[in-house]
Length: 209
Length: 208
Image 1 (cartoon, rainbow over the protein chains, first blue to last red):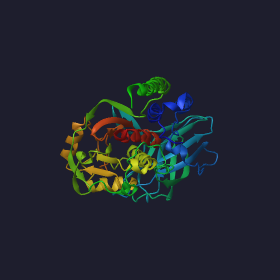
Image 2: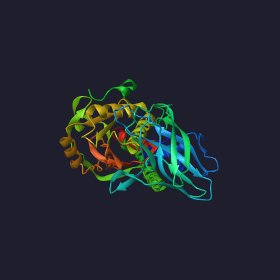
Image 3: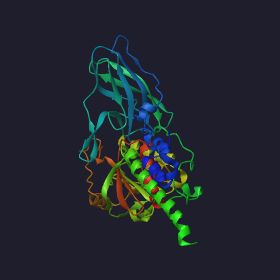
Image 4: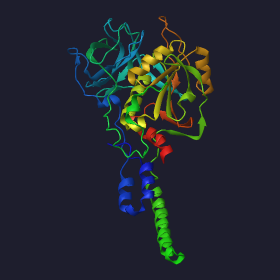
């Protein structure tokens, strides 16, 4: 849980406290490194909202969300989801649309690394393997909403319609969320190793003064 | 205190010193398998060239933050995916830090798209994630010259019929130590816990 008991800090402290002995050392250094959870979307609660069209493809969408926006003019956002194909045939999403009150311009995108630079790349389609899952997640495949007609606020909902290569469509409710919230930790409770701690009240001061 | 009387004390101190060294060796071996940082380290640390741009309606220099641990992210406000992901991760990482450490860290986002992002846009954008974050833009040429000085050359995609375009930007976020030296490059996929871990290590350097 506590990400701050890093090996280096812990070990350095142990050097000073030689009386503590090897037992504590084994405890401090032998603990496996806590790895963070996989993706932000994985931490969100899955809310099955989609229903495949009757007798159509076996595509279901869960954990469908769009990122809340700051409210700048002409801003963009993205929709993320877990797309599951329960059918025996691979499916391909060829386009997506949302109500015009959100935006008319919707594209399928992915992120690609070009040297040390990241750039977005439009894709013609998103493949969902037979009996498989496609994750649309931050930093990877996403449905890009371009030139939003209005700010997306946390708690807003709207509908996204995915069109498949077969011509069938799949609808799902989209929930607007802020970034997945981290669990706040009690300030100062950590072994921060800062004896001359700064006054807590200055934490929110603007740095520009 | 006599010299003779002092000897046993020196002897036990020496023993303590030997034990300390042994423990140091054992601990360094025991701890070696785990990396200190989750980010890429920059060896040797290099100074990031200073700039004179605009933040919060004022002239702003990177060197204004000397003495603090500074996180520098290069992105743009029209970025729908990676920039908000990184900003929200940085905001979460700040929440994870103890308040005393948090106050020693500043997060700066410099636009990779100065043609569209005004300093006011940058302020609105970063404050959406955390009101203490600093959004930086300015004259297009000056912003690009700053980025080029850091070895970063953002490229804009060919604009579509509606004028929209995307911009390439670095895959890593920079972490500068209190002396203004570039020490770490945090990969964009790094989770808040890992970011907080690394920021805490850098922030604690002065007090150890």
